[in-house]
Length: 144
Image 1 (cartoon, rainbow, N blue to C red):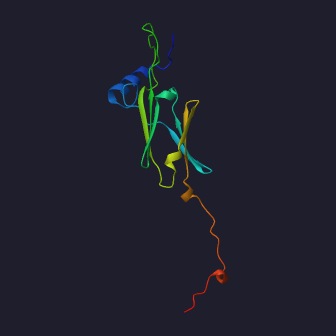
Image 2 (image 1 turned 135 degrees about the vertical axis):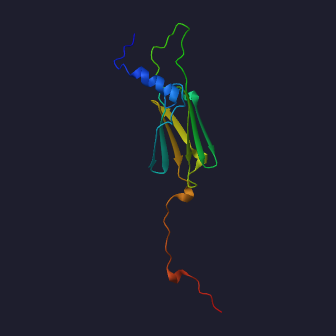
Image 3 (image 1 turned 60 degrees about the horizontal axis):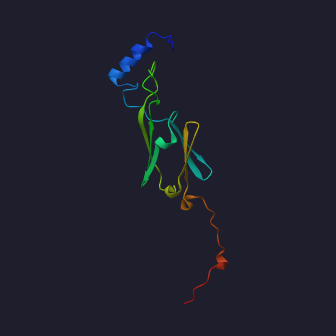
């Protein structure tokens, strides 16, 4: 049996359910994300604890990346009686606008330890490149 030490926790949970400010019955908040550049890749790291890899859906349309994930209830028999349910269930969604300089055809995604890591390479045309400067004597003179 699970014992609670905060007598007001249950009142907070009920208020959240009725006021729609959180809890298991309201719409879950967006999934937390870090975004950074690692060499020639932009990396998105999204926290999705308790989500099965088959419940994650990643779509790209034009320059919009959409990540959807569903945290499902713990599977059990009819004899399972939930004592405390604080983790939000349902569908989580996050959309990220991608720059035109990213190669959306070669996006890779991995899921490990509750973190979805999406790697988006920088397109070749957007990478920095060196421009050589020619010598004026190398030009052909046009005679009239």
